[in-house]
Amino acid sequence: MQYWAKSSIAVSVLLAGCSMFDSSQVDTGKEQRSVESIKVPAGLQQPARPGQFDIPATDAAVVDVEIKAPSLVLATASSSRVEEGERLARVWFDRNDFTGDLIPFLQQALTAQFAEKGVTLQQTDEKGLEYTTGWITRSDETGFWFWKSANVTEQARFKLLFEPRPHGRSASLTVTMLEHEHFVAENKLAGREAHRQEVALLNQIIDRVGKEEIAVAMANRAKAPDVSVEPGLDKDGNAALLSSQSVDVVWSQLEAVFAALNLSVTDMNRSVFTYYLTYEKPTQGFWSRIWGKDAPIQLPLQDGEYQLMLKRNDNGTAIVMQNSSGEALSPETVLTLHEPFVQAVRQARVEL
Image (tube, rainbow, N blue to C red; front, side):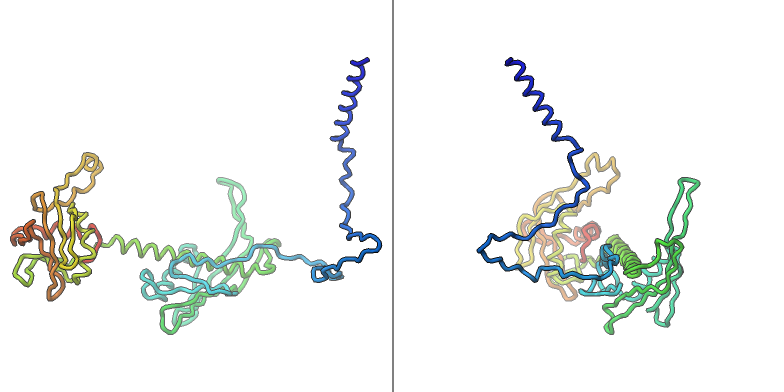
């Protein structure tokens, strides 16, 4: 009897568990009931309801609402910026070290952008501030490999307008759609789609301006700096290297030259513009020779301690190299120092 009772309980529990997961008992078609208002017992006052949050009833017709994200002008070039609250497809450019004369630089970037895309660009004014583009098409590709084909879905033409400030250091660029044609019903302009296409074209132009700025920066970086250092004499008649830069400029840039010459700074006295240095001839490592790296610059000096003093000169600064006792090196030694010193200045990319 005890065994039969336990078996009956187990079967009952099993059946109950099955009924919990029986999908036939879940009424998925029934709508959720609306939240009822608070029921207040008799004799108590109904609490005040905040009417400012009530949604008034309306019989307005249901209309489709555009839910696409807003289009944004991306000022990715270092010279570009966007004014707050701007509603047009417009960006501002400011002159910097990479642009030079602003309008010619922007005109060059604009021409290069459309030439690369194979789109015609027509100037419509005398000053080169207003342009009209050819048809810019959008296509859908179908198939693959040799059977791939492109079907044009829409095309548009745009107006580009530069508006420079009177001082010439700033100018705006505005993109406006002139015409649009669609060949697929889904590509018909609706809502702010025209503005999105204007902003998309403007962002491509800004990106091109940024690339042109990078190209100018890389060219400037690769260009060897001009070196004005020449052998000569200081006011006291000592052999020296003469620079056209001021003594403060030379002082601020010499440590980069020391690193290229394997000179270590042990002390300095800014009041008399003197560096205390230690020189050790550099050696080229095995792997440097294997990889074809240039041999380190060597000075025609013995290993040891030296002093380098800067003196104001009529046309710049005199760089006087001295031994550890403060005596100026011979003219022959200073003359042989000139070429490796110039190499170090170019390698350090400083202006001396």
